[in-house]
Image (tube, rainbow, N blue to C red; front, side, top):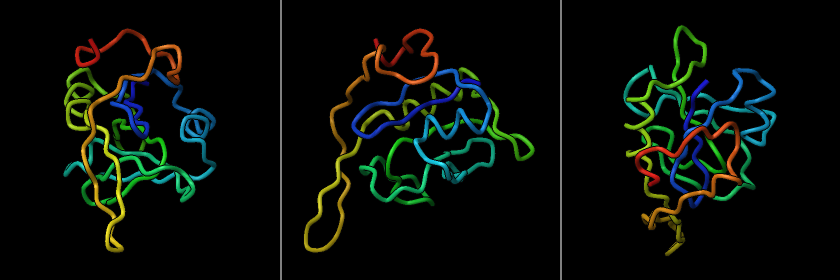
Length: 135
């Protein structure tokens, strides 16, 4: 299934992964995961592990702060499905800028960073070809 993989410090990238529990836990580096719908619809899910030891990644709408790697995929009738090309492009643009987090006065602040592209040979899943935003 086609998903976006979002890693701390990098712009999202498209990958094809198997739609299995083993594949999800390998990508998320976690035995447990949560599926949420932070994008104001129930068609797109953000799936992430629950490990507080991972580096901060992004802030996502109703979810708040997500730590570690997460994926963005489709959801239909309670099952994960791949993204369409249009969905992958839309959410790749939306999550294009990585965030860095600074603690000041006991509060955590999110600051956008310059986008970095993860080298193709370091990516997870079957990366396919570079998307328009990675050229």
